[in-house]
Length: 287
Image 1: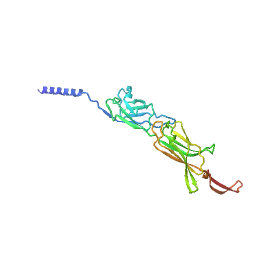
Image 2: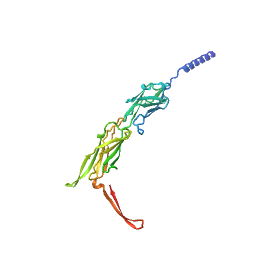
Image 3: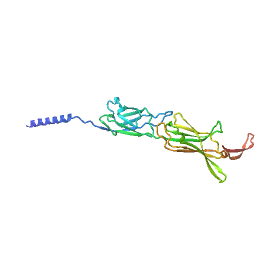
Image 4: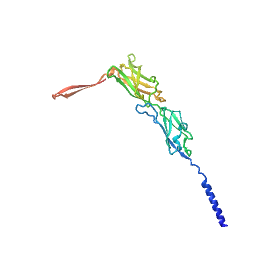
């Protein structure tokens, strides 16, 4: 009897081991995080394109076995749409090489399709996004300029520098150059403000990221005056977006009455070659 019970027990044990041992194991779903590497939005010297690649790196292998054969054009979407090619650099890194320029001041959203990744992988999010930088302008080198070849020609010049090339629109209406002069009123013994706007010409450097503004010739005013420079916001770049800040500066334009002056005069005794003293007068002038 004991022998039969032992046989039955062993038989049941073998059946249990066979049942649980042969039961297929469920695949473990791995959750994987990732980092987005936004494209560089800065131009190299003499470049006029913003076509740097976008990258997405995952913390583990996420690509399916046949990832080299995948057509990713239907598995990843980017909005707003931009032409380019997605590719797996390896099983944990996606790369997007644009064929068009990125737009400034734009938020791009990337969405992953469900068939993009291996079946035993779940990424931490099915979408990600990044924003491109704004268009920025700065003003510099505002100065009073006298033509060295013709000293009677005097102008005011300054530069505008952008982080990307200027757009093709004419932005001259966004700029004003106004000379503000003081005129003595003999009757009231007070100063009167006289304003005159001056025209200018615009030229650019090779990749059109710097604009050089040069005024028309300026007759020397009677008294020292200010050339007020105003650059309004809203100047457009080649890659979308527009400047958001108003820029102002001024340049002092010397007047005829005070441009050439004697600032000081000093007297000194200097030994000559014969060891005698000569009288020397030093005159410091302005203009």
